[in-house]
Structure formats: structure tokens, C-alpha cells
Image (tube, rainbow, N blue to C red; front, top):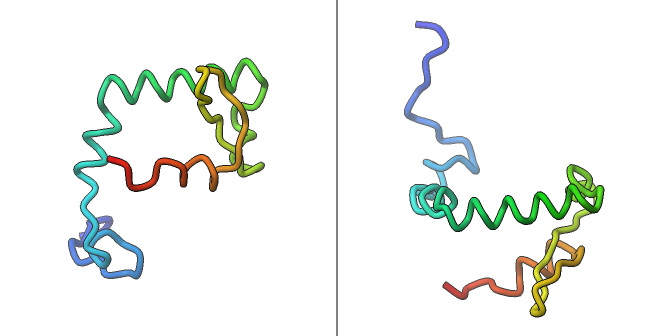
Amino acid sequence: MKNTIKAKNKRSGSNKATGRDYSYDKEYQSSPERKKYRAELNSEARKRGEYGKRWAKGKDLSHKKDGSMTLESRKKNRARNRGKK
């Protein structure tokens, strides 16, 4: 019985220990709209030569109101719409 996955993962931070259910997130992120949104951000990052480098810089590509994109800190970009669902 080697390499079997046990259902009792109680490490701190694990889904079972925190009680977090990711089924909604999985469904939401797999929708065609979200896939298109991520593809748009990735293609813009490739054009700018930032693809794969933004994580180390702590930056996100952020949509502006006029439709253009800019590099912005992850903290500011993700906090802006927090709680608006």
C-alpha cells in the first residue's frame, strides 16, 4: 500500500484543516469568460516582455478604466475589488 493518499490531511493550512471548499473557485475559474480574461493578461505580458517575471517583482497587470493595462503592485490591484461579488 505505498503511495496512497490518505483522506485525513490535518496539516495546518490544508483544505480539510481550514474547512475551505474550493469547488466554487474551480468552477468560476474554468468558465470561458475567466479563461479569456487570463489569456488577455498573459498575451499583454508577453508583448511587454514581462511574462514570468511579474511574480518576482510582486506586480500584476491591472486593467485601467480606459481599457488599457498597467503594471501595479499585487496588493493594490487585488484589494481594489475585494468583497464586491
